[in-house]
Every structure is written in C-alpha cells, then in structure tokens.
Length: 95
Image (cartoon, rainbow, N blue to C red; front, side, top):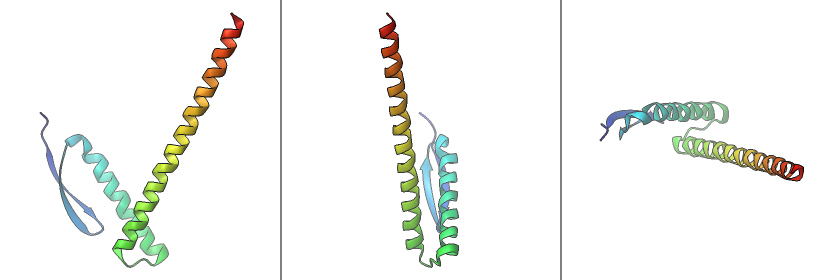
C-alpha cells in the first residue's frame, strides 16, 4: 500500500488541499502552473476580469488542445496501420 501525500495547489488565487499518490505530484503542480499562466495571459490579452470567465477559457483551450492531440494521434496511427497493411500485401505478393 503506497503512502498518500498531502499537498496544497493554488489555482486562480484559491488554495486546494489534495491527498494524492506521490507519483502524481509533479503532473498536478505543472497543471496548476499551466492553468495560472493561461489565466494571466487571458487577463492581460483579453481584459478578462472575472476569474470564472478566465477559468472557462482555460478549460476550453486545454480541452481543445487535448482533443487536437488526440485527433493527430489517431491520424498517425491510421497512417501507420495503412503503411503496415501495404507492406504486408507486398510481402504476401512476393511469396
């Protein structure tokens, strides 16, 4: 049984206490930094004053980026599968 770690993360000027697996600490800290950085960017570039609006814009950008990465990965996998299939067909034809 692994020990849990208690940490506090700051997101949008609020502190969130969490109990996590130690292996997840770095990812959570990086995620909270990314969110805070995006909030700052939105507040500076778009005159966003309401944290709720900034958080919604962050959520949209992060989700969009994740979806875009997922679509690129699917396309890459499909391309590899097509190439492998063609290679298999070429090898079968050589028999």
